[in-house]
Length: 331
Image (cartoon, rainbow, N blue to C red; front, side, top):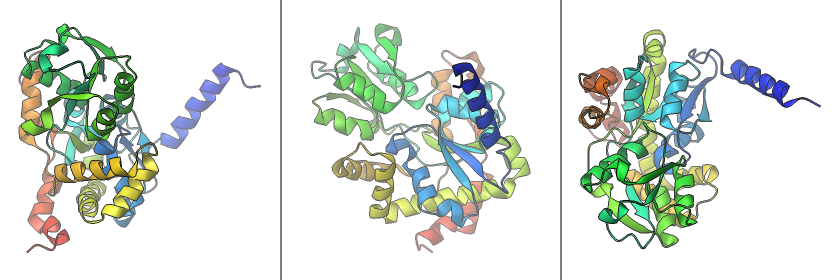
């Protein structure tokens, strides 16, 4: 029988073998997605299962790495060629010295909700309560801190318990283990069905924020420019596919989210459809907002410029060539 130590060594060697040299694009490469929630990741599932990556000559295998911070770490390490991340993680990765950039965007606002036990009647009642939170540097972490600031509450005034991704956070509140959390529609809907109350709706505020985006390394941009160009085109077509092929998209989401009912997926589809950015331009204004908040506790962000975290040449090409307008039949 293999010992646990030997098993761990063999597993590590196997992962190193299958994920090694992923920066090359002639063979199979890897894209890390950082959430199992369809409101964050559905576009990448659609790009893969809808044949769009293949159409653009991208042999990309999807890998789930929980949390945008960990996903960015895998990008910096060269374990993956692309990552579906959020702006806060890209900012932190680059401030730490990582040669990375956002090349395409999917959603440019902050569609989060603070949801909790029905006994919590208002944002002011959050003080002293226990919160199910994600790891620092994630969009959920940023959104919670921003929401508390808007409510006049310090982060120190709550009892934060790190739980992880959205499904785990909402489950911890539904089961009564913790008092409240912050989630997107995919978890808000079943939370409300379970009797939880929406305490704050950040989506209504329409705050510019770099949420879901595609990032890659500077090395990838320099050495495999055409592959990055094809990736950006593929993501633009994925948005078009999502907006125009509802039934196909829902079938794909059902494959990856076996716990959601058809009704919930319908609502998620509609919500995500409204958020998707047709031209896939990253939001520099949203990155500026993040840097302003981060500068209050991170000196590295004080002098940082939002423009340094994006490489817009590829989306600029889409605009110049009329690529997106052609997809939608516009002239």
